[in-house]
Image (cartoon, rainbow, N blue to C red; front, side, top):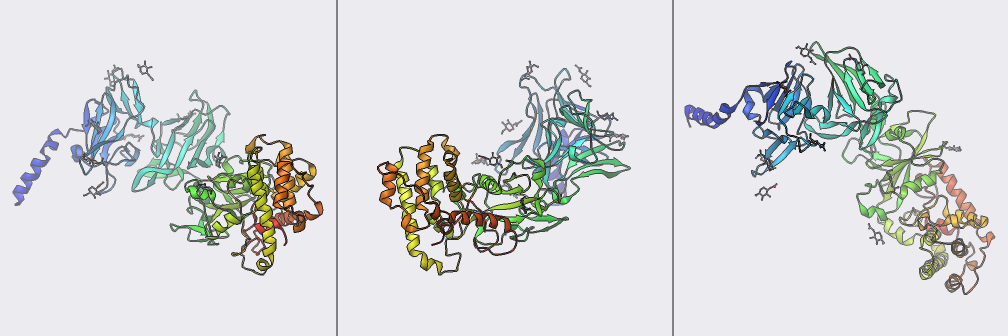
Length: 616
Ligand SMILES: *[C@@H]1O[C@H](CO)[C@@H](O)[C@H](O)[C@H]1NC(C)=O
Ligand SMILES: *[C@@H]1O[C@H](CO)[C@@H](O)[C@H](O)[C@H]1NC(C)=O
Ligand SMILES: *[C@@H]1O[C@H](CO)[C@@H](O)[C@H](O)[C@H]1NC(C)=O
Ligand SMILES: *[C@@H]1O[C@H](CO)[C@@H](O)[C@H](O)[C@H]1NC(C)=O
Ligand SMILES: *[C@@H]1O[C@H](CO)[C@@H](O)[C@H](O)[C@H]1NC(C)=O
Ligand SMILES: *[C@@H]1O[C@H](CO)[C@@H](O)[C@H](O)[C@H]1NC(C)=O
Ligand SMILES: *[C@@H]1O[C@H](CO)[C@@H](O)[C@H](O)[C@H]1NC(C)=O
Ligand SMILES: *[C@@H]1O[C@H](CO)[C@@H](O)[C@H](O)[C@H]1NC(C)=O
Ligand SMILES: *[C@@H]1O[C@H](CO)[C@@H](O)[C@H](O)[C@H]1NC(C)=O
Ligand SMILES: *[C@@H]1O[C@H](CO)[C@@H](O)[C@H](O)[C@H]1NC(C)=O
């Protein structure tokens, strides 16, 4: 093809577009109307401009060979203040349609299939759109034939708020994923009835009311967040009562923007330059994912917390140093529901970003009750425990970064939930003797047969363990012994070293409290009493004092009287219970202890069959 025929070819191909390529419209466009980047290629895709000339509406891309967006731009600074199809970019020939039903963008893929990339949502279907208008504030509105606004881009913000824009309660500003990916990222600014908060996966990490530069003027409920010439305001329903304000200097043009780095910034445009006026959180370590999942942020540097190793900035991040443990996946992997749970100690020098911003899941409970709460909830990935207040904070899925403790007087003990991934987990599940817990879980009367089998199993097991004790005691290898237990999902672990707790409740004759709350009074005090007594008899330190299976059956059937447990043969439980508590207090020191190969093996509701059975 010669150069002249090439020119002819191109001009004939482009001709239809050149012919319909309209001039830029000022302020208002009536429907029907269509635009593509290609149709307005001479104006870089701009088809509409506000009457003061400060804002443009265009179909443009932000770098060469990248996809296109329908966006509104502050012309002088080139700042993109709004994007329609942020989650679905389009090509230069895809069209924006303005019809009586509103705005819509259709996109055609490689196989010529057409779909809607974006459209105005929430329009009252009985009202018909007459025109779109780009107002001097930068707000793109759809008007009916009486010039009544039916929809406005200011009510559907992307990552930016501009001066003059106000956000109603419940509206959110979402960051981009990255500079080259404008789709919704994970950080979000939400206006609530009492505050403006930054969130990551619905977990708060900053709030305006706690900002030292802000001030609270009144306590009425918040209805709007507004940005204007003098600052950022949370306003009451009358739009004039100031609830919280962040006062800034005067400015001709100002934007507030949530960056994909999780920081909220307010900047003004002066003398052709952006000047940052406010940024928060200024402590990088308070940004939820600053060091990736499970990375430790201290003074802006990333490392791994105690008992974890790896490269926090790599894809795998920080993982438990003990290779037989792994962080759970939340509730995603259903198989984990049946896995053994183990708590790895983070010590008292660390904290989690969300703790400051939420109420504890429970107050006034023990550390073990707190761990127990987490064990029973697959979406819980760890705990922080306020030692002095008994406050229990649960770490929700997904997991962010860990940070150095910010306040020295409010230290919390951190424990990460892990699951046992090595093959020994299977063995443990079979071997776990946790008799009382299992037994109390059994649904009450009428299932004596099952109870009998369980108790029979316990008694049989204890006797078997007694017989094999010698060979086992000879072995020092903890991985092949039964040292490493843990809790059994479905069997509700109790605070306390459970057998000791059962013994104490037996002494106080408070049996009903031992029943699993899920049974909701379907068991009587007498039934629990019988079970506890039989179980305690099975735990007698002296094997000769343990009932045979036949006796267990007849006691449960009621054909023979239930024997009273022998205190002197159960006192060893007290020793074990204490040992568990002590272990839980000393962990964190880098010592080995008898509960496992590392200092973190210490959960009280989790015990080995060996510990349960006592010395043999
Ligand atoms: C469409 O075609 C382009 C260029 O041929 C290719 O890069 C892209 O991956 C294709 N997209 C899909 C969804 O097939
Ligand atoms: C596109 O259209 C073709 C032909 O109708 C169809 O086979 C294909 O599944 C469509 N692709 C998508 C992604 O919808
Ligand atoms: C846009 O795409 C949708 C879905 O494919 C289709 O129903 C609609 O007719 C298209 N609109 C126009 C104006 O082509
Ligand atoms: C829709 O608009 C019509 C007429 O303006 C009005 O009567 C009706 O209540 C509106 N419906 C809703 C759900 O807003
Ligand atoms: C709507 O606004 C336009 C431009 O601002 C104006 O020309 C027109 O008269 C208005 N229409 C009505 C019904 O008020
Ligand atoms: C900005 O808004 C606040 C709160 O409504 C108001 O007190 C202040 O006067 C406004 N500033 C300007 C310049 O209008
Ligand atoms: C709009 O443009 C005028 C004139 O160029 C300028 O003085 C004014 O500050 C601009 N306003 C905004 C919000 O950019
Ligand atoms: C958990 O274990 C029980 C009993 O072995 C089994 O029936 C159930 O399917 C398991 N659940 C999962 C999610 O693996
Ligand atoms: C937790 O509190 C107990 C009792 O108040 C205290 O003895 C213990 O040292 C505290 N542990 C830590 C790690 O602060
Ligand atoms: C599990 O924990 C999550 C977050 O900690 C909480 O929202 C949820 O209600 C808990 N579920 C149950 C059943 O307690």
